[in-house]
Length: 95
Image (tube, rainbow, N blue to C red; front, side, top):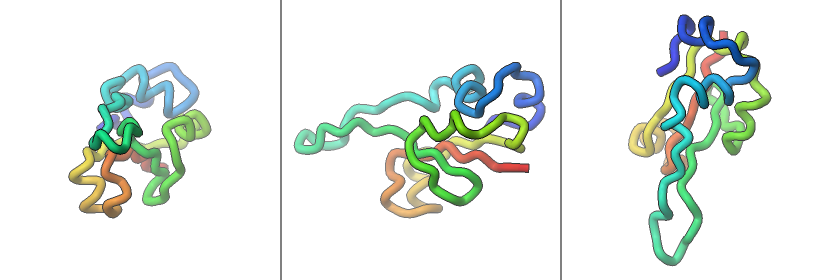
């Protein structure tokens, strides 16, 4: 988790930049799950409990609007939001 205190200290504009600076491992692209489906496994962006889309959507969220940022691994993401999020999610919780 990236806390409000960490966000207050980082000197960036967007949530994407904050994650890139503070938790770059969250952006790790994993190899495809199946040989027949060569699509890489990439987390999905969420704003509160709503799916935004790909990680580029994090550029549109201003850091000052975020209270915290969480990474949910594939297991936790599918348990909470459903099987379609089996690549994990980066969830921005707003103020």
